[in-house]
Amino acid sequence: MKIVSVLNYKGGVGKTTLSACAGQALALTGYRVLAIDNDPQHNLTAMLGAGLHKPTIRDVYHATSIGLASQQLLKSARKTNVANLHVVPSTGELCANDIKDPLVLQKCFAYSRLERFYDYAIIDNSPGMDILQEAAIHASNEIFVPTELSQFALDGISEMQDLLSRRFGDEHVLSKIIPNFYRSVKAHDTFIRAFTERFPGKVTATWIPFDSVFDTLVKEKKILFVHRLSSRAAAFYLKLVHELFNLDEQTTWNMVMSRRKERLTSEATQRLVKLRQDAKDLSAAANRPPLEAPPQPDLPEPREITPDVDSAPVPNGTMTPLEPV
Ligand SMILES: Nc1ncnc2c1ncn2[C@@H]1O[C@H](COP(=O)(O)OP(=O)(O)OP(=O)(O)O)[C@@H](O)[C@H]1O
Ligand SMILES: [Mg+2]
Image (cartoon, rainbow, N blue to C red; front, side, top):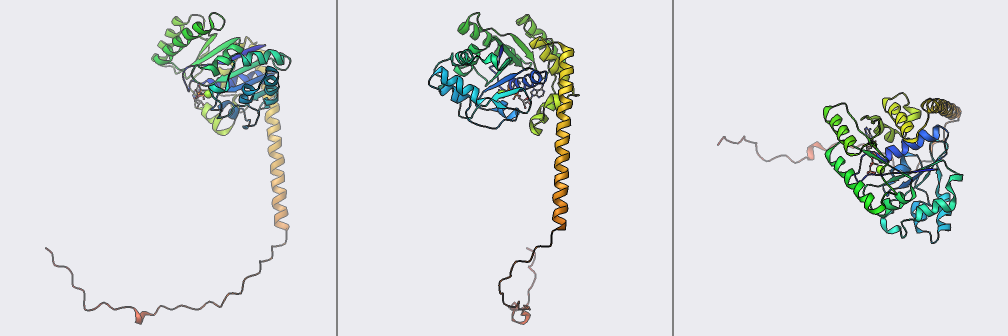
């Protein structure tokens, strides 16, 4: 079973987008995927269309034994907007103090024999590197790092790599660095070269282009590979998923296309059923006898009011305009 942590010191670089899109692509290809939201911002939970239900990842951390933690983990896995993809939700209350043992997730996965239920687990992390991320790293066999293309991003990942080797030795190293927000400009090409020189063999051949479709997906609660499969972003993301998970490109495309078709057909059927129901409700309302007017309270007859012009005060004397100074 492949367990991936999506990490970066920096915030807003596309960790949650990568976790959600990779999870959805794998699930649409037919794999059983568990996405774990290890971030108090709980963006992944929202992006995958799951509400803030209990138990959450925090309950896994709070369990008093590994047996109970494993039970909570399996109990917390919720259905998402894509079949075969489950999510362990997070909560705004999650914090570093919730974890007493940094090996808790690793032990939990082993105890519950997670591989019986899932082919992949993807852990989305908050920015930074404290015990929350450490627990995810211990449990993972790969670390994916999406990044923007800037000097701070380059320096940040170097620092992260040093920190990882100090804390984990050779056991947990960065597996892949994924350039995100790519634009075909000289500055970005220069940074791609700089990343490739500093992290040989780690930078993916696929760079995710900057595309406003990602914000639209969040706003409209849509799925990239279902509702925007013909976008450039979807094509690049599917290519990236092949590269990261060593999948066969043609098989993935065929599976995603056929599941997308099923999904769109079922969404269209649901819309049609709803339209028919709305039309029925409307015609039933039109044929209903008019509602009887509610009884009116006894009010006194309205009096006609005429302004009493004669009694209005008359200014004393005549008004003289002011003299200019
Ligand atoms: N390739 C892209 N092009 C344009 N916008 C993108 C791209 N990838 C992600 N985004 C947008 O960038 C924003 C940040 O992305 P995301 O939430 O995935 O980052 P994050 O690293 O998880 O952030 P945080 O550190 O706060 O958890 C989101 O609004 C997302 O829709
Ligand atoms: Mg995030």
